[in-house]
Image (cartoon, rainbow, N blue to C red; front, side):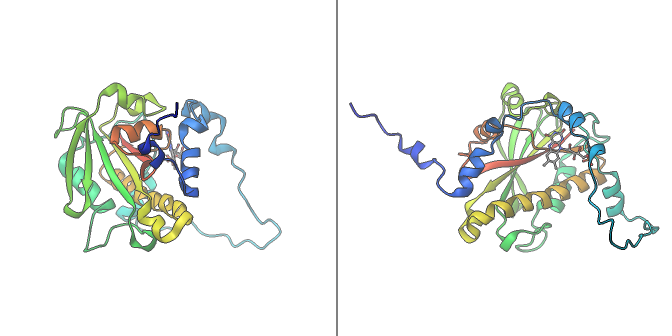
Amino acid sequence: MSKKIDVNKLLLLPTEKYEIFHKLSNNRVLNLNQDTDQLKSKYSSKNIIYKSYFRFENIKLKKPNVQKNNLIKAIINRKSNLDKPSKEKLTLSKISYLLYYSVGLIKEFKRPYPSAGGLYPIEIYLISQKTEFDKKIRLFHYYVKDHSLEKLWQIPKKDLKSCFIQSKIIDSQLIILLTAVFKRSSKKYGNRSYRYIHLEAGHLSQNILLISTSLKLSACPIGGFYEDKINRLLDLDGINESVIYSIVIK
Ligand SMILES: Cc1cc2nc3c(=O)[nH]c(=O)nc-3n(C[C@H](O)[C@H](O)[C@H](O)COP(=O)(O)O)c2cc1C
């Protein structure tokens, strides 16, 4: 007897090279299940060997001694720390400020971060917890065009817990999830788009981190998550659109 073929499953098999790489580098496959704190002490920034050209002339630079503006203050004060709760509560007006100036449509077609070819393949989802505007654990999508939050469905706590390696992530006010709609960029740049999308995610995440710091919100970028589980919560297929990064606001 011939086996029934599930067409939907077939349609979701990776075919482009970047799609295959994306699948191969998912956390489940990499097995990065070790506690990040343990990894941190094993591979510490204290042990980095700084590259230097000792044989060449060296021009010593004086440390800048100028009045620090707000941007420089935010750069100096930014710190990833999952143990430090925010000094301020996350209100709707703070979320509006944070989203508008880090990823919003600040002018017609123009956003506050660079994007290869101006194609903007990244979408923003939020999972709010214990916030003034929703007491439940709920998923929102940021509708950039209208600067509004689309109120999606509730998320069971145990499902959210299973998405992250570090359990302390769950005890946070907001989880910001960056997803990529790969085709928006790959139709122009092919496999190279995979690099551009992640560079872009870095640009906009730095905006989120610096603006959070200026709002006295404690934010931490998170790469230790299980793509498949988050995609399932967001109802994404993981091929056409997938979560690629996250930022937690404690
Ligand atoms: C791509 C990326 C992924 C990260 N993932 C995690 C993570 O899963 N958990 C965590 O506690 N910190 C994570 N971090 C934060 C780093 O540990 C932190 O940036 C680093 O220790 C330097 O400290 P600083 O950000 O305070 O300067 C991540 C940072 C980056 C850039």
